[in-house]
Image (cartoon, rainbow, N blue to C red; front, side, top):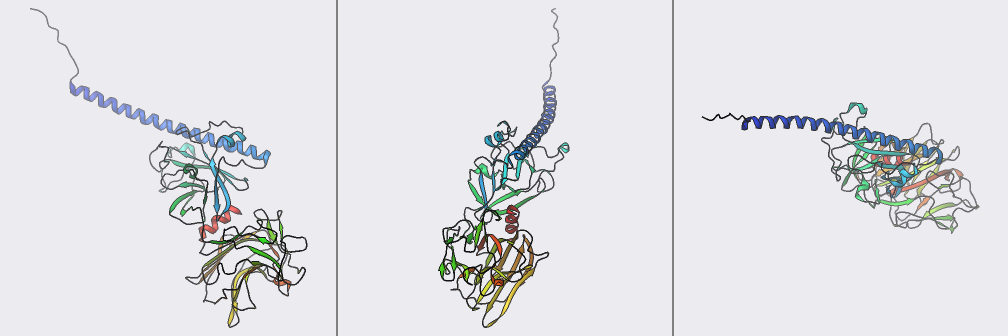
Length: 449
């Protein structure tokens, strides 16, 4: 009879077991490879950002400035430009003598580049993938003290990646949720001093961030703003588009601002931001010199909440009083912002009620360098807060005091005595009809100091 050889083969169960084993091994290999790939890409990012920072520093050493970001988003605080943000793009890398292919190795996007208005400081930002890589010696931002989750290469979101910044602390802005830098939304400018419905994250460093509801293309609460350098022959222009210009006056006569025989003077060499206004504290042609608000009915101060903010610097030792802002009419329902050598305050007075002074003493005094003052009067809860260099020095409850609303605002008033004439340098004065928050005051101070 013929011989039949038995044929052997894998059973179905054996095939399933082999496939499962191979799948497990493939998964392990893939995860290991992915982890190594993420670490390798993170190493590339660290190297890229370090090289960009070094070459920008080399450029700064010869040019005494950093390049402005390409097509930058202008970031403002109440219409005052304080930062520029965009990608470290072709022209920036070209100026720094770097190839324009220095990009994120995962999604091929450029790193975010950020400078202040003077282009004297900069910040770089990128996104890492592997937060657990101890060899990186970084602790990227995390809301819970660990990583933000799995890596995502989705170009419309960086929510699962880890923020890394280098160099100065300048508040790069990201969109909450997606973590996209603001330039990815094709904006041209944003304002950090106005609350609205959109929440943003400000990246200070690898360990610090701020969340707040901000960003608006307008701030209707800013009712007066003078930069002390935008003017016509006799007007200091109000930049809020509410046309509350100041008029330079000598007694009842309008005079040209910034002439050789008139005060105040406007100088470009002594300003905090650009030009600033200077009064010398000495009577000139007559004993009556002032700057007068163009329209005294546009808005009144003391029957509403108000925040008054400005930069100032003493020109010399001053023994009397100086008034950077005053609403006065023969002591009839009057008030003023008053500065002495080591005090600043908000005073009220009318003929039938006692003199009220909300003031604070500042040590070591105001006669060294620039200082930023913010006086916040909350009409609803009857409090006055005084901030110097963003620090809240004093809070006081007050009783209401009537003010004559038809009386004009005056600035740098002189009357009979040089002690009542402003003898300081003043810059960037802004008045709001709302309470400025401590975060807003701090943000503006650190951006412009």
